[in-house]
Image 1 (cartoon, rainbow, N blue to C red):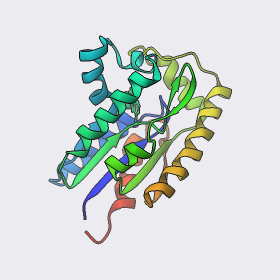
Image 2: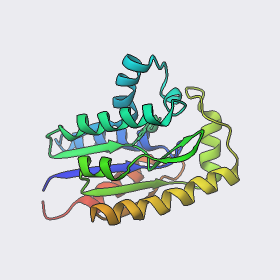
Image 3: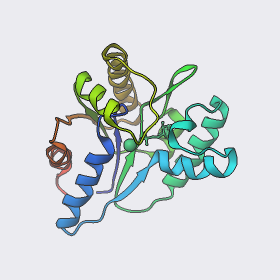
Image 4: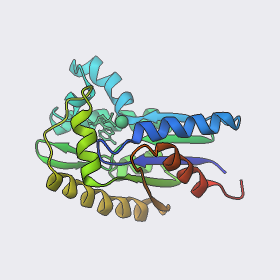
Length: 193
Ligand code: AMP
Ligand code: MG
């Protein structure tokens, strides 16, 4: 059974860390995982054509430029042929013009996910993680703005699930518990295969 698992979650929820744990766990079992970090795939092209210097600069580009990068990335990821693919991405991007969908219909059609997993964490945990991450240039946020992001994520999660007719799973990434979160995802996905 081929899996294309889209892992989403608002910035600071700890997606990349959980994805790393997940790769590690599978590796110990002798299993290979192909990961597509959507932002990284987009950044390669963004650097080349728009002279963008960091991943946090991309969402400041005009929407039509972001759309081009987004669809090019979908085409690239669409060509991955492995049996177990993780796409680390976002349900929406916080742009100057508002929340913009990270997985619009054309992207979902290209990726054809078999599962969508939303990583979740309490707003104060996310806020603290954002404040302590010096490697990123995040927009200032508050507990209230994070609550808004969380509800946008839930709405778009079910919209995406409906569109691609695949299950939507919500996994909590508690503090210092990213390995449990990774195990929770794998447990939910282990089936007859
Ligand atoms: P991340 O490293 O996960 O924080 O993602 C970095 C950046 O990549 C985001 O801020 C967006 O600008 C871009 N990005 C990631 N996934 C998508 C997507 N599905 N659609 C559009 N932009 C995306
Ligand atoms: Mg990330």
